Image 1 (cartoon, rainbow, N blue to C red):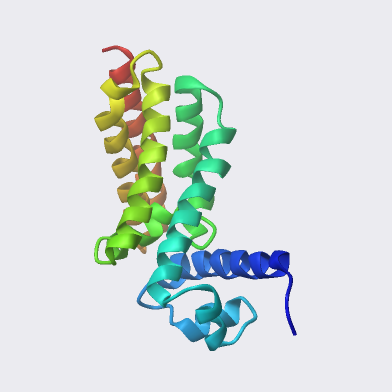
Image 2 (tube, rainbow, N blue to C red):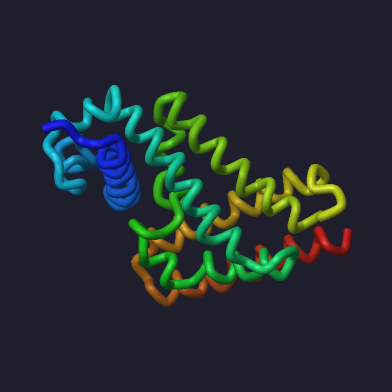
Length: 195
């Protein structure tokens, strides 16, 4: 049976979306081809009709997750510093912390991306720089390039704090860490604003 071009594109997108969720939940190394394809309702061999390898699927899923993060978070926030504060408060919410597969790809996959293939690392870098540039434009609307490193530091602070909060077994301490993360991030934003 021959499928239409639209059906093939929908199937490819379903594979990418379900892989992104699974990768964030179980990690890159913890997600085999059989599981990734089962999540999409397909057989193992179907992967190769859409991607050359699992590595290509991972790179594509990481890029898709980074795009979705930008679209779902950053573009819905208010402009300027107020929007950054919204992003910080949302990012450090218990709901975001507890929703690994629906949450941030930075906090869920960063350690594995560092050990991944160059295409996966590049897909992540491209997506991260879109976020960083958006943060920088909100920090310094008249000269975003002056705030790029500070925005990169903010992204690192967000991801690292969320990762640590997720790792803690003491729920009260994890919640306190998120609150401290908000204070630290807002202090960074205030320092940039008063520069």
